[in-house]
Structure formats: structure tokens, C-alpha cells
Image (cartoon, rainbow, N blue to C red):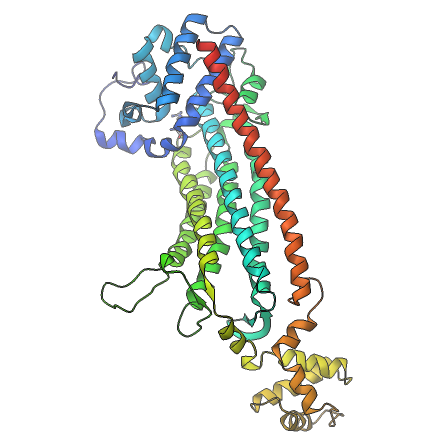
Length: 492
Ligand code: ARG
């Protein structure tokens, strides 16, 4: 194949392989190769419709593009001497149909609007895939939660036993986070959904392109309104990276707990063997490697976000080649989430929770002390701060039985009440973890009926998200199918 057709005019000399490799974006360009062909076809249809290109070259080009679309770009198009797939593909087309035809595709276009359009197309597909996997994960969380609304377990603050809750309440906490991640990605999608095509290098073009037409063909909601912003902006990428990164933070926290919970110390969960690895020396080992790698992927995603922001922050308007360095970080961050979320769903779905261990721990560490203090307030008239001090003092003495509680009350010299009025029987009832859970029946609390209501509310939100993903996905698929159909009709 020919050499780089873009350098031949202005620049002289050969470049070393190292230099070519340094400049090339071919690895990341594999992510956008298919999108690039769609962009070419839409641009070509647009050129033809506006009478900018004659029928003969347009048809020859379209036939070649369809062939590439059907059979995939040849490896030569990814040769690093072309710097990127846009130039590699153009060289291939010129080779194939001759320069008189092949040299006309890039009229009114720059690689700057081309690459920005490609990235947005692929990113929309990635967002949809992420949203769909988040929906599956949320379904899993809600399903597991539904069978554990009565499963009491200890809740922690500072990783110390704090108050009893239920496994369902705990799982719903994560479901909330993933529900917000879904909402964030839906909002980001709307901002990604603008077509830069027609912006050319940055100042648009004197060719009378119909941007609305190519926007429609490529399934975008609207053309990007300012051609300079359209090629220079990457905040849409940073935003999605942030969303993926935020999501991965929750994934990582949940994984951290699965690691912790599967230890012999805690023993709350047994992960399926599929999600564990063994040791090359210690034959007994079952290690939660999948959860660990996911926890690390959250770090990688956050690193990608930091890289993208840092690469962008010093750039003057409009396009700068620095932007090429950002794109691999986008795909890496998005991929971390895309790989992790379905695996996490599988890991949770197949996990065996040890509800007896959870129940045994639920009341440990005086985890129902808050409820006892609350009862002294609600039923025996103490100020909360006083009850807090009495119960805290009793815990210091190592027991919450009636005698210790009364001794603790007497010790607090500033206290007018000494006879608490409470009985041992009452104390025993109040210290039962199930009781503490049952009385927390306000909105958001762990009481089983309240959690059941939360589950059905979330299921509704989930089905709205699923409907959005379905609609958006089929609109996009339809647009691409229509574009390919138009292209085939044109080439025929
Ligand atoms: N590979 C480039 C990128 O990813 C495409 C745009 C190149 N534009 C240019 N003026 N060199 O950003």
C-alpha cells in the first residue's frame, strides 16, 4: 500500500518506526473503526445529496466502504505509518478506487470532526451497554434482597458493630448507588448525543454540507452547535469516565466487603468457586481474586479519569494532538466498568450468605444499646443525653442488665433519676436485634415491610430505566440499519 498521503505535500523525509509508533493511535482506533465507516458513509451520502461529489466517484467509494463494513478493515489500514485509522483507511480507499475517486471523500472534513464523531458514536453504545449491565446488577441485588428482608445482621460504622440491620437493607443500599449511576449515565448520554460532523478542522467548511442530514443518518439527536467546541471538547468523555469511575467506587466497596465477609474471621458469605482462585503453594486456599481485581479496576478507572482531566486542562482552542492521548483512557475506564458489573452480578447471584453467622453477630458489641437508650427516653421519660450516658456507662461496666444499668444511673451524680422504672424482662425484649430492626419502620429504615416497599419502588424505577435503554438502543440500531440500507441503495 502507498505511504502516508497526508505528509506528502508539506513534509519530507522518512520517519523511524519508533517515531511512527509514538504518534500512532492505532490500538485505540480499533474501538472506533466500525463507527468510522458509518461516518464515512453518512458523509458521502451528504456530499452526494448536496451535489458536492459526482455520482461515479461517490458510487465507487460507497461500494468500497460497504465492502469494508461487511468484511472489516484490512490490517494495512492499521499500519502505524498512517498515524491513525482515518488516514490508513483513506490510503486504502485511494489504492482501491484510484485517487481521482478515492481522493474526494475527505472534502469538507477533517480528522478532527471525524474522530470526535466516531468517539461519540462508540461511547453512546458503551453507555447503553453499561446501563444494561447496571440494570442486570440491580435486578440481582433486588432479587437477593427480597429473600433476606428478615435476615438480621450487624451494621457497622467505623467497621465496629453499630446497630442491627438486615441483609436486604444492606443490599438495597448498594442498589441505590447503582440506580444513581444509571441515572448519571442516562444524563451523560444526552450530552454525548450531538454530532460534530461538518465542523471540519474547527471552523466548519465552505462546502454546503447539510449537517442536519448527517446528524440524522448517524442517529444523533442534534448537530453540535459550535464547530470549534465540537472538535475541541472532551468534557463529554470526562463526564462518562467520571460516571464509570463513581460506579466503580461502589463496585469496589462492595467487593471489599465480599473479601472481608468471606474471611474466616467474619464468615458471612461463601463465594462460588468460579469467582475464586487457589494458591500455588498453600493447597487449602480459596482466595476472592475476582473481587480483588474488581477493587483494583476501580483504581484504574479513577486513574483514567485523572489522566483525561489532566491531559485536557491546559489545552488552548481548538484541536490539539494531546486529545489523542486521552481516548485510550476513555476506553480503559469504560471497559473496567463494563467488564466488572456483569461479573459482580454473577458473583452476588451465586454467593451463599451464612444467615446464622449474621444473626449470631447481629447483637454483638452491644449493638442494641441505642435502642435501649431510646426506650429509656420514649417510655421512661429520660432526656436522650442522660439515657445515652447511663447506657454508655453500663457498657463500660460490661453489661446491660438491670443491676448494671441502675448502678450506672447512680454513678452519674448529676442525675435526678435513679429508679429507672424499667424491668429486666423489658430490657431483654429491647436488646433483641429483631426488635431493633422491627421498630425502625420509618421511610428508609430496615423494618421488613419498609424494605419490601423499597424493593417494589426500585423495581419501578428499574423498569423505567430498562424501557429507556430499550428505546434508545433500538433507535440507534434503526438509524444504523437505515444508514447501511441507504448506502446499499446508493451503491447499487
Ligand atoms: N488520531 C487522532 C486523534 O485521536 C485523530 C485526529 C488527528 N487530527 C490531527 N489534526 N492530527 O485525535
